[in-house]
Length: 376
Image 1 (cartoon, rainbow, N blue to C red):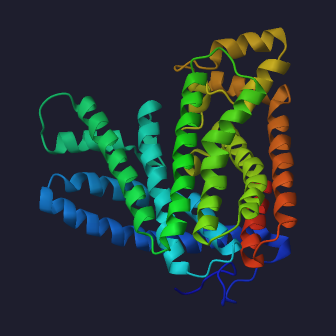
Image 2 (image 1 turned 90 degrees about the horizontal axis):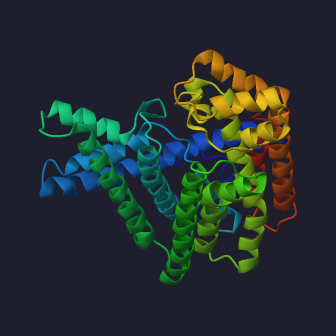
Image 3 (image 1 turned 30 degrees about the horizontal axis):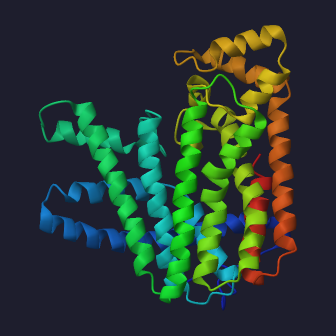
């Protein structure tokens, strides 16, 4: 491996500078994405060969997993696994890179199924898996219901990605006792994110959610899944003691909540090209976020009437969407959400700064927090 950032020992190519930690986090993610994508591609090409032994058509599922993973994504979750490993004193970097693929394949499974739940047509600026398979249906001139074929194939592609995640962690080159501990963490990770996703789905059918209920969903759907459990996985593979895992929890929960808060802000006020999806979809779908909860709470009667009419209105036009955005601004909900995300990030920073961790691993944790702090 070449041009390894400071988080990996024995390299001086990139040095973390206190005044630009956010930039260094982006550099690390860029380096890490290149490294892990190389491992992912090798793994999937081997699986494609195995699928071809079954049937040429069976390889379609593997190819779709490859298309979906390599079309985008920053590899945040596997990067946290790798960082947790380094911060806990781990030295087997190639082994950690291999193991980190397990959370990316789990994430692919979750996104493929999430896109079905949300009835999304695009992801990261490209077709979602069920829409991609609808295209395959037409290309192959198959018979029957194109939409149902797309949904069925997408579920199976997601299941396949899930099986890859399981296989990767089981075959990672670490002592079996560490793999056993990591499997326990991985099992918790899967249980918690699926539970969080269900709470999110359920919330969509409820009239309203409190800020406390929303933050609870963010903890289980995002914070534990995106930050805490990947860090725990890396730590257990490095043979870390329990107090290290507790330190990561103190850092990860507020940081993960802030990460999702900011994504919700971008889902309403962001850039369509950067988001890879329409930035009016959260309003049209009536997504329960802190932005919407606070806008309802602080709205005047006339503003509340508009929110009730337009939030969740799938056919709202551009002017109506902008009217909702304007109310979110004027009620102070936007400023509150930004401020809350910053307070949570500061909480995460304090936890990381006081922790007894490998300094090079700690640098990325602080850099990731700094990146979010300057994001909105």
